[in-house]
Image 1 (cartoon, chains in turn yellow, blue, green, cyan):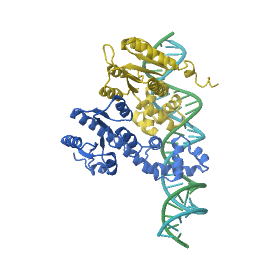
Image 2: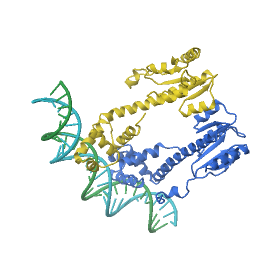
Image 3: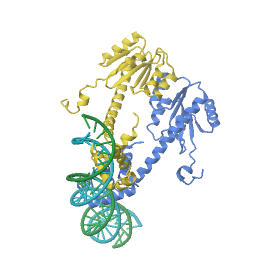
Image 4: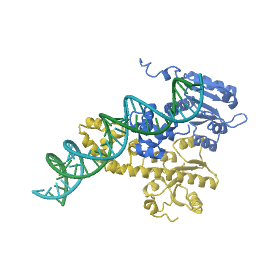
Amino acid sequence: MTDRSLSDRSAIPAETPFVAIIDDDPSIRDSLVSLLRSVGLTALPFASAQEFLQQRLPDAPGCLVLDVRLPGQSGLEFQRELSGTDIHLPVVFITGHGDIPMSVTAMKAGAVEFLAKPFRDQDLIDAVHTGIERDRDRRRALDALCDLRERFRSLTPREREVMRLVAAGQLNKQIAAELQLSEITVKVHRASVMRKMQARSLPDLVRIADKVTLAGDA
Amino acid sequence: MTDRSLSDRSAIPAETPFVAIIDDDPSIRDSLVSLLRSVGLTALPFASAQEFLQQRLPDAPGCLVLDVRLPGQSGLEFQRELSGTDIHLPVVFITGHGDIPMSVTAMKAGAVEFLAKPFRDQDLIDAVHTGIERDRDRRRALDALCDLRERFRSLTPREREVMRLVAAGQLNKQIAAELQLSEITVKVHRASVMRKMQARSLPDLVRIADKVTLAGDA
DNA sequence: GCGGGCCCTATACCTTGGTATATCAGGCCA
DNA sequence: TGGCCTGATATACCAAGGTATAGGGCCCGC
């Protein structure tokens, strides 16, 4: 437990996971909050989707507990709407008046769980933990990708072009021909690419290039 | 339409998709079969999971329509059991007595759809087409991977070792040291690897190596 | 026993890649 | 206008990769 210095980035904000709860019934909100707090989780209650969207979320792994029936808009619609934003919290649905098509729609859209009331407390807790774990993995992958993308952004346009062609397996002389450059210039750019991308070998660079360019969305 | 010679492999068996149906009710089986045949699909009816397992399935993209309630064993159990075999057909559930937890379990296990009776014919047809499309993609990916694996199998043990280290980014002289060889021997093996794996460049080989070794299961 | 595949090695030669140093031109901003 | 970054280029040298040819040892199956 003395490895605090290993990773300052993750050590400073402590990465305390949180659970956002959206339900218009105050008594249900309260009971969910106390249930989740009783197992040591940070619970953030909201009465509506709008209220949730106005709040700034912690920069930590989290999970969203969502009532299917919300004022104004259904929880399923809100789930779909969220996927168009940069909020990618795993969703656990709870509902008092659900049916099979609803649950199937929710699960198809990637929900972690769909619980019909009454449900066992432990089932919700398990689902929330699963969601948090899923978000933790997603954030880890995204972090690694962001590092790479930041390095990629630091490349000049020429360097990016050269990197693309190197990763495609072209020889320096072919790259020079394609970009109308001398071979020596290609070598210079290539060296810069290796340095800036922190690639220790060509296979290393190839894998980095594939990660950066294949994962265009996220 | 004159590209018949482009891909003999896929041209010969015609790749006609099929739909396997497991339901113990003969009248339901019959109506499902005629529904699916009416839209041009090959339907294969079975009265039980056992009967299905005894039948040799076509080497084509397919889909499985499964009643949740089966004699002996539930459809959900059978779905889980199938995932332990080499049968990876997408599953569309139908049921007369389903509930939300069942549908959630099915969807978590990767089901394409979960339809409660009565359902619209078109919903089933849509689900089956989705399943077939999913299976087609899976088979395509598997085909490509099998090609690579066959080539990899044709490598001698030494060549495999060299390939691993080359893909890891080691220099020939480092590989030689690690395997207690002379550098020239490494070059010979390396050339064999490139030839046998049909890699046209080092980046090409790196990607092949990653596909072959990362996809250990399937 | 003998061919053949696998493994290892060597010599020789050529191509490709990598690095260092230096120069020059254009654009941008204090 | 002078400094700085980017881009392009050159010379020179060295390291690494690739190919061709040739040969030896080992083991297995015919």
